[in-house]
Image (cartoon, rainbow, N blue to C red; front, side):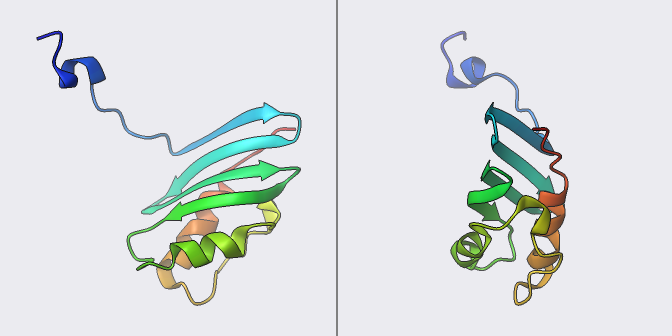
Length: 102
C-alpha cells in the first residue's frame, strides 16, 4: 500500500485562490483565480513580465491575451479586456486579488 502512487501523492487539495511569492526585491510570482479564470504571472517592479492565463471560454485565445498582458502594470490590467467576452471580465478580477507587498 505505501508504494502506490496515490498513497505517495497524498490527498487532493484545492488550489489557493490567490498566492503570491516574493522572490526578491521587486520580483513576485503570482497565482490567482476568479470564478473559472486562472492567472499565473511573473511581476517585476510592478509590471507583468510574462503571464499564463486560462479560462474554459478563451477558445485558444490564451496566447494572444498572454502577449497583450506582457509589460502591463499589475494595477493597470484593463477592467474589461475587449474582444475576450466573459474571460475578459474574469481575468482582470483574478489579477485584482493580488496585493503585492514591496
